[in-house]
Length: 234
Picture 1 (cartoon, rainbow, N blue to C red):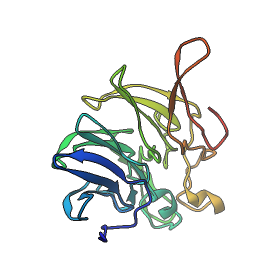
Picture 2 (cartoon, one colour):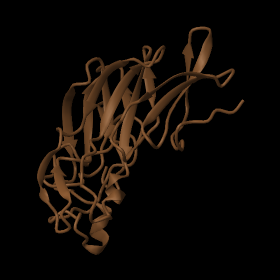
Picture 3 (spheres, one colour):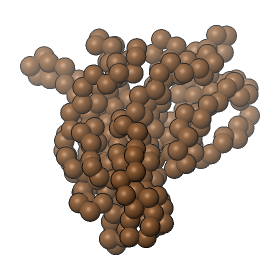
């Protein structure tokens, strides 16, 4: 069989039991998440988990106890090369859906809702906070009932403490339990390559986390998280 998704599919496809058959779960690069029957390719359900027009689902989903957790990132950073693009409104997020029907359990954003902060030299509206996209798969910590994600940079100033960070989320409620930032003040867009109007006035180094956090036991017996960042920091 062949299934036509709503948009390009970049992430891994997740196979999960769903009643008498298995479901294949995956996201696409325009913000849709789909469930299809593994035996027939028939669509079971689909949901637009991110409405912001530059959203893309690149990180693979993970599941636990009948719930699938979906990270969201964005290419708004590159859209901002256009001086007339209103930068920026995307917010990194994790959405929890029920595997059986796609209904929403919770949704957690990495930054607060953006507000207008001014206009750029081309007259385009500027907004903040934005960014902190999640490019990779979440990590489940069943022992602590937490979901760990790693985030990217902000797209506009002021930068937030949840960008370039490891973030722990309550797996039942979606509440952010803690976050640990490695690079502060990292606000960047592709407009910074030629100092175009949508480049933040204090541009950061663009040191996103692009990999998942690895939960392992150290030589001392403690549980630790390890993740790779563009700068080489772990």
